[in-house]
View 1 (cartoon, rainbow, N blue to C red):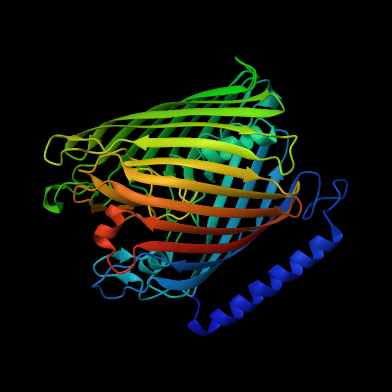
View 2: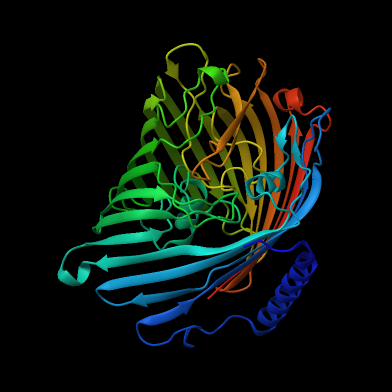
Length: 502
C-alpha cells in the first residue's frame, strides 16, 4: 500500500497532535495504577495489546562532489502501529500481531551517483522507490507450548516471532538486564532494525533450569529494515542458533556467562560485497555463504564502595565458506564501568573497546572480514554511517539520571578500520529476498581513520506505557570518509521519537 503525496501533511499533523495529547494526559495524571485492570484485558486468558511509535528525523549527511542527486540535507517522518491479541494459558501461549508502518517525506534525490544513499532517508527511498511508503503486514503469529505444567522445564515456540541473540532469558534485575540489552544483545540476530524491523519464521526451543538456560532456534528472517514490504520471508537465508547461558549468580555472584553458536547460510540471488573486484565475486545462488560463528560473553555487575562496578567481555570466531573462499574472522569487545549511586544524578562512567578483523589480501583464498549477519540497526551505531565489520571503536560513555525517569547518555567515539587494505563497510544486513546484499563497502585507499562521533541521547519514561527520546549526533569525517565525501566531510543527525505500549 502506498501513501499519496498529498496525505503527508495530514499524517504529520495527526502524529504531532496525538503525541502532544498523550504527553499532556499522561504527564498530568501520572501512571496507570498497578491494581487497575490492564488496558485491553478481555478475560483471564485473553488480552488485546498494542504499540504506537512515531519518529521525526533530520539529516545533514556527508556529501560527495561532484555527483548528481547528492541532497544530503532533509527530514522525514515515521509512524508504526502494532495491534495484537495475546492468549495466555498455563499450557500454551498464542500471539498474533499486525504491523502498519509508514515512512513519509523521503528524499528522492539523496541517492548520489557516485556515492549511494546519503543517510537512512536515501536508503529508505532506494528500497521503496517512493517518497511516501507504507504497508500493513503480519508481524508475529506464533504458538508457545509451555511444558512446565507437565513437569518439564522448557517451552517450544513455533511460527513467526521476534528474536534477539543474547536475551535468551531475563534476570529481572533492571540494571543488569539493561546492560545485556544495550551492550550484548542483537550483535548477530535482531528484530529491532530501524523503523520497520524484522521478524523470524521458525522455532525456538528452551530448556530452562535455575542455574542455566539452553536455547536452540531454527529461523528464516523476513524482509524489513529499509523496505516496508515486511510480510515476505527471505527463504534463501537459513539460520541455526544455540546458546548455553550460565545464569546470573549461578557460578559467581553478580555474573553471567554465555556460550553461543550461529550458522548463517545465504544463497539469495545476489552478489556479496568484499574487497575483491566485482568480476571475481561469485553470486550466492552459485556459491553461497555458509558461516559458522562461535562465541562467548561474560558480564558482571558488583557492588563496590559507594556504587557499583561492571565489566563485559564478548568475543566471536568465524569459519566456513565465503563463496569460493575460506572464511576465517573474529571480533572482540571489552568494557568496564563504575556508577556512583550515592551522588546526585548517579553518574556512570564507562570505557569501551571493540575490534573486528578485516581482510588484508583480496587476491588470496581466505576471506577475513568479520561478518555481522543480521544485527540491530542503531544499537551499536546510533548514527549508522558505519557498522561492526572491519572496524575499531574506542569510546567513552557517560550516563546520568537527573530524575528517576530520565536518562542522558553521552558517547565519544574514535573510529578506525582494523585493516586499511579492506573496505569501509556500512549496512544493516539483508533486508530483502533479492537484489542488494545488505552491506556496502568502499575502498579505503590505504587509509584507516574513519573519524570521531559525538552523540547525546535523552530518554524520558513518563510511565510503564509511554516514553520519548531525543538524539543528536555529529560525525567528524577522517581520512577514509574524506576520500569519497569531498563536498561535505562531517555529518549531523537529530531524531525525536515516542513509544506508547499497552
